Amino acid sequence: MGLLLCLFSGLMAAVMPPGTVVRLLFVPFAVMGLILLWMMPKRATAPDNFQNLLLAGLIVLINIWPTYIVYRFGGLPSVSPTKLMWLLLLGVAGINLFSSTVPIARLSRRCKAHPWLIFCVVFLLAWRVISSATGTQPVPQVLSLASEMITCYAIFFVALATLRDEKDVFRLLALLLATAILQGGLASYESLVKHTLFDKFISVGSEDSATMIDMLREKFRDGRYRAQGTFEHPMVLAEFMAMTIPLAAVLFFSRKTGLWRWACAGFIPLAFGVIVFSRSRVGIAVLLAALLMVGGLLLLPRGKNGGRNGSSLTLVMAMFMLPVLLVAAYFALHEVSSLVAGRSAGEASSTMSRVLMLTRGVPLLEASPFFGYGNGMGAVKLGFFDGVRFNIDNYLLGVALDSGVPGLLAFIFIFAAGAWLGLRLYMQRADQAGLAAGFIAVSLVILLGCKTVLSISSGFTLAYVLIAAVIVLCETPPPADVVKSAVGSPAAALP
Image (cartoon, rainbow, N blue to C red):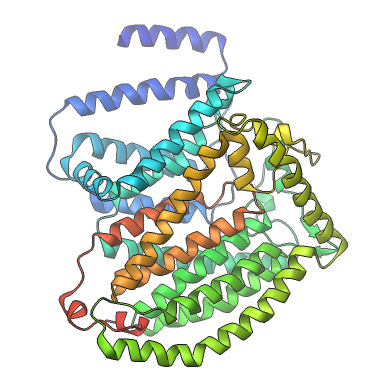
């Protein structure tokens, strides 16, 4: 079989470009390698520290390395540090899963503990493939799912097998905060100089997609520059900063060192300023929603054994904070209403185009509600061409048109279940694990809010890793002292 594969590879190399040969042969060689590893004797240990380092490094690179800075070697696929980190993590994780008993046992235990959530992830993956296979161009549509399979579903199971306990989760959150602070500094600098960062290192050729070329154009709206940091769009920057705010709150409440607390406290105004610099209306809207949700979490009673003291403290907090939250919600509603309608001609036009997309998209979904139109075909059917590509400014609508109502329901259930797990753990346990799970749930809700007006798939790698982190926190045993004296305040999580 190996000789036949080598002969076939030689014939392909003679008639195909090098990049095509590499892409086509990667999967069969990888499958053969995993089969060989599965047949070999299993080790009782695994390099968990190294794999955690790779996972954290990947999350950092995804959110800091510019996607438009790549390197090319002849006709081979473009190379970047992010792609190399993906390859390294998937390779190491695959080898460990198939050659060691520790990570596979960890993965199996967590999958059995949350069968419905795992079922929906697997179902969404399978349904996306099936719906694409029934499309008008089945082979290209199925192959185009490769990126989503790796960056969403594969990374979810890799994170489940990699993260060991609460300490690994908090290290990941700390690195995310540091990345967000660095990203905020870069975006602030970009808003001053008003041009794409690291433009001297950009090399765009004819092989680049129109989407990449478009992301390098300087973003202006109504004469004002829109900062995007090292991301591909200003809204992606706003989405990341808004998602990181609840994670910063976790570190603020759970760390007693002054440096971390000052960093978390300083990040909040930095994130607010960066979102304003991005000129993203949805960023401002979800920022207001995030602050309200964080305030709401602080009012919830925590711990099963809080007793009268916990209930009384929650009641006192509610008496003082509820009027503040109501006033903030009143002004936030007015601000969000003006944001949705548009404060200028450019914003009003953007809002109208999204309304038209929904108006046209619903009849298309009614015409093919079960399978949809296959991956990437929903945007073509919708027919909104912005001069660069067919576009849907609503990820949920895109999922519905591509994979039908079953795909949309599975997608929503995954994030709703992840958020519910986090919220439930927050209310049940008054320790650091419960605190982190509750605020991670807020981050997941923020992502879904952003995706109602954004079709770019950015943020999903981080989101699936955060869902895996919530599952890890659910199996963390509560400390004995917290079980004996749980109180209804985040301050109880302080060591």
